[in-house]
Image 1: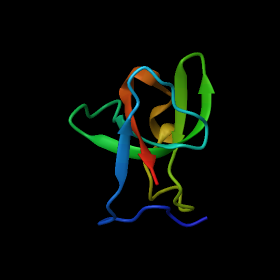
Image 2: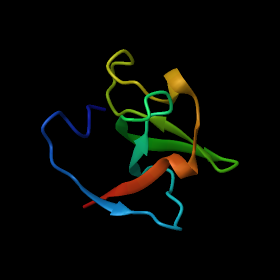
Image 3: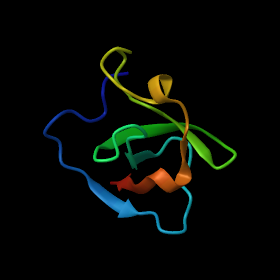
Length: 83
């Protein structure tokens, strides 16, 4: 699987509000350690109001995701990509 998004791509987001994201959706989230940084990742797992985010890049060194920083809270997700 190649990266779904590359630098320079333009995407549209839908604010989640009170709705919960679903496994497989690509979302906009706060980086858990760099609060001024947003990340775009795919939800791989949802468990106990926490999500495991992964990048689509097949090179594990090319993407910083939940493999590096662990699961994040639902509250750290603000939007999902829409087609």
